[in-house]
Amino acid sequence: MIPLVVIRHGPTAWNAEGRIQGRSDVPLSPNGRAAVRSWRLPPGVGGPGWTWLCSSLSRARETAHLLDPAADPREHPALIEMNWGAWEGRVLAELRLAGGSEMIEAEARGLDFRPPDGESPRDVQARLVPFLESLARVAVPCFAVTHKGVIRALYALASGWDMTGRPPEKLRDACAHGFALDDQGRPQVKRLNLDLVP
Image: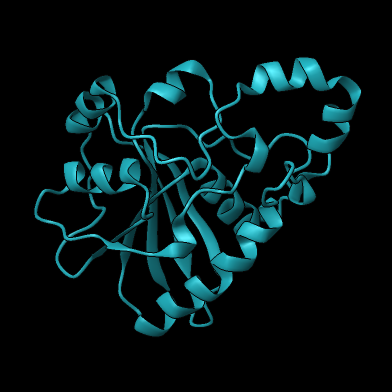
């Protein structure tokens, strides 16, 4: 089994405002940079031979550099955040308030929830599968700094959660989430919510 440890990027100004970021290239905020500088990889995770990967968005790339200044993370398109289309930059709480029962029905679609002109979690899984298969072929343990939507889609893929209702285990921020890939690239959950804050 090949270890894959995924980490969500540090906080941004849009995170603090509750705005949907999606593909918008919002950088880490000053508070976000300070937070990431305080993070430490959990004991027993990482070491020689591990590869760093990241989303092409600056908040993920900078998080990877701050976590390991010696790392030279390789960007991969499969790790970019879910495309939220027309809702990027909007506040989710306001969308829920304005959308009423239609928004409740949309969110209840789970893996098939799709914002206008955007991507569904199932679409995210479709781009993750060949990425995971390629990691299995290389067979090198990896860190991947990515986004909440990607981590949730990966967790759903590994656990069988259909993204309706609450997840079997809540994924917390400022944590590393451990998965393992079999020789076909199929993910399994190993350990979630490994604290990055000492």
